[in-house]
Image (tube, rainbow, N blue to C red; front, side, top):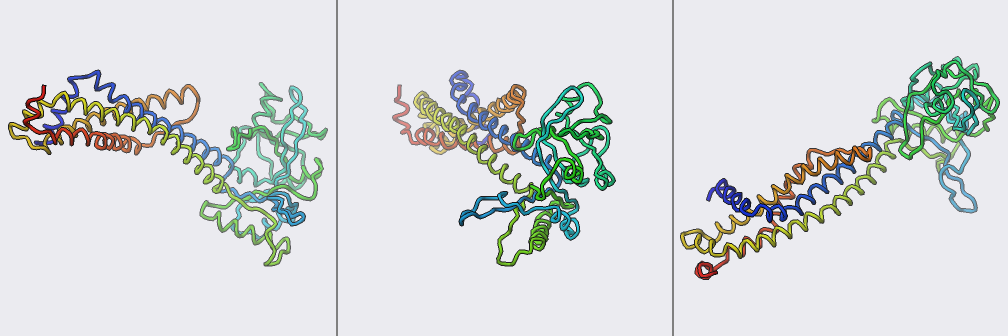
Length: 405
């Protein structure tokens, strides 16, 4: 019997009991829809995390002090104070692959100006910080080499600071006091939003590191140095170059361990993406249980159908139908039912993902290959759970089937 004829017979059989068919397909519909929604949420979260990590900067390398050892116990990264401005100068002077380098001097300060006062983080950085972080100003200008060299008291402020101190007015050209030191606001930084760790990147003030050191009392050691390379392919080589430069700057022997920790944003992105993928797969696996339940439902209904149509099967066999023809007929019915359920489930998944995104604000992303996988999985459920009823129908004795009442 031709495949088109089998599909036609299957369709007619399914349409005879519309409500029973719909209830049978409900497990497949819910399972496919749930899998698509869960994967869409997971992929959307992955994309948002990637965007936030990309907001940290362009090909960024983060250099922090290494681990100190006390009484033979390693105290962990960041516990050693070995980074200085001399290290920054060495990287600027000797590192060829590092296209931009900036020290990071950090403190919390009370800002006074505009509508009142506001406490936020204040960073002392170089003119290349904006390049490393891929950050521009929405108004005003960035501070330049002249500001840095002459230790001018200029500042760039983030949008959160603007909202709290200068709401409704242009802060460029106005003054703000940081620890009673007056700074002229020369620019407002473009809005960045939250970082991958949930920190508000716009709640910040940037000043030239020379001014920061002279006016805000920075100690000799600095907590961090940022750098970047021309392209992502240079990151690994740039990190090696930074490591070798700092080892030479600290006069370490070959046998001495590194006293700095060097990471890049690609490592952070890979770790975050890996965690998100694991969570997505876990959610999809949980949702897939509905598909198994739906498959069991199809098997039960097909067994009932075999019982109800025993006499019909006997007549078909009596007029020449072979066992494999009967088996193929019931198997096609099971597959068609599963695929229809899968198609409806995909539509439900798309609609549910849109509703979730609108109601919660979470980003969702449905990969096109998920549609194919869902349909394939639905057909697989139909074959797997439809095989036993189809085999049972094919193995019926024609004479016994004809006598069945």
